[in-house]
Length: 193
Length: 173
Image 1 (spheres, helix red, strand yellow):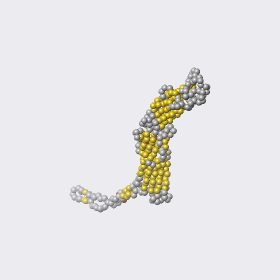
Image 2: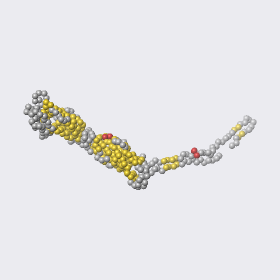
Image 3: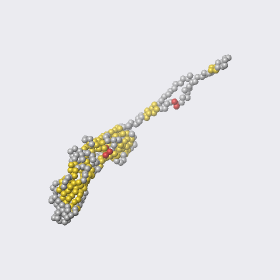
Image 4: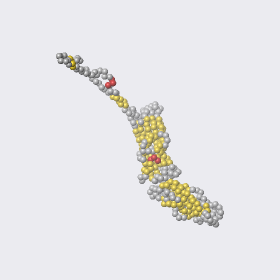
């Protein structure tokens, strides 16, 4: 492109016009946009299955008894023998209409010649503060034929673990007893419905 | 003025997705029962039978996968509305793989999560595996995860029958 010049008497005014042009030459390959590579993800697969869980909780009961219980004579001639047995029990009664209890029953003393259950020589009272139920009230006489109460009034939906109660024994001491050691087996039964 | 034609192009290429196996069939034991027991003599109650999750893969194609288990609720619930939290349920797992057909070109593998796990409402992986590569397109590989469940017993649960649903999930990763 030629420059444009003006000549005259006035001071020379030089005007130069220039055009700019852009050459696309040399457009490098860098202008080529990057190749787009879309790597599709592998196909994910999911499968499911269900299992129905069922847990059955039924009435249950358990008891342990301190054993043996040795009765000792109180002060004074022919004073009765006394001692205590500790019961530890756990129980779960039915949520609706349930109940529970603890009772006892004894077998006869052996050997013969001393106190007897049949004669009513062995009695007890109930004590302690178990978390469920009520200890028996008053003095109970141990029987060979029937059970007698220890803990009652355990109602519906009652649940306890290792709660305790006491049975306080009194054994008559008669001058008619032969000297010796006598023992009787007492069975405690806890029930839950 | 030179005229130039700018060619600006983009080359777009899509790689085809990786093809998976021909088919996946996932089954799970439908029921799990815990019978009642005396909590003093049986503080932990074993499930009546294991829950077996089975994945049947036809023509596997080198995919990693997991099998997980979760509870669909936070509690076991009785008809009376009493609840026992699901975290009183625990489980352990063992896993095996069996194949049919010629020896695989790439052997499968599976391993169970070790130890005792606690059931939660979030999925917990019970097994991870690799399904390998079969020699033939009809070859079938079977992954089996045997879950043993245990229930923590208590004197303080109210009586009743408690239920909940477990969800087992097979997923390729």
